[in-house]
Figure (cartoon, rainbow, N blue to C red):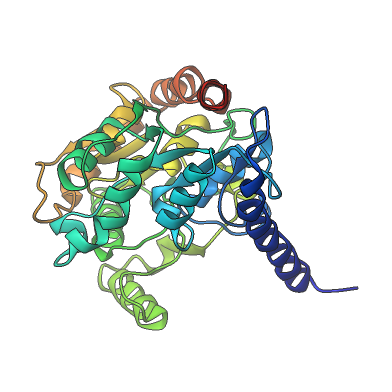
Length: 367
């Protein structure tokens, strides 16, 4: 029997061939009904997925990759396939519609020099899309400012979470207050702020620990990043209280969130992080940098945001002292915050509403 790696590779080859057939088949016209192409292979829920591709896992479960023939091309700006603009132009010339899910864009603080070149593809796609789903109001504002406005219709539709799969449960770890730094750690300050927050809590008498997930990727040298992370943990004498869990799949995610009491989200100006929604759905309050699109997700009752000035020129890491104070405040009313987190996820961000809006837009464009 072939190995899982070989089976996965074979599946990717078949999907890539189907995408090529789909472009060629449009020469004969577009099919009736809603038939969607994502322009790239979609990993299974059991496979590790990072960033924008995760939402395509959810969408493709309801709107499978059409492959041979499609009438709607759906792309996510944070996980574009090769030659995305060419694909969009080809699809529209043959009568298909193009829908763009717009995440954040490059700007000086996030990207540094060359952010204008980075945004060119996004600018071109926004000018071609028949409909744009902005992942947050922050995404719309930043896209308008640094990439340009949408040509077609648009709406703000926050990312979503399957609240039937991401559910509350008692923390599975030890009785110490367990904090979770979820997602991937692509900026050093995210880990630095979280570890120093833990050290301040322990210094003040709180029995706490920190779980860190995802890749450590602030430079391209993964081994050097790990050494730097371990040196920080050793510097603040938290070696026995910090655990690096590594990357995880969507199938594993609910159990990871349930290991914690409170989720730390230290990224500055994060556009619309799915990890925050998954935390809320699991009844985990969020302590976060009050910047980007995260305040739109957490609201006033499902966690506490640490004030941060809006800057497009530099990142503003959250102050560990302010984070530690917020953690203590949430801890003092943990059950109230936890109930509010779960209720907010169910009422505002359930995946069924997200899928319903997509269906309505797809059907309107296909009519």
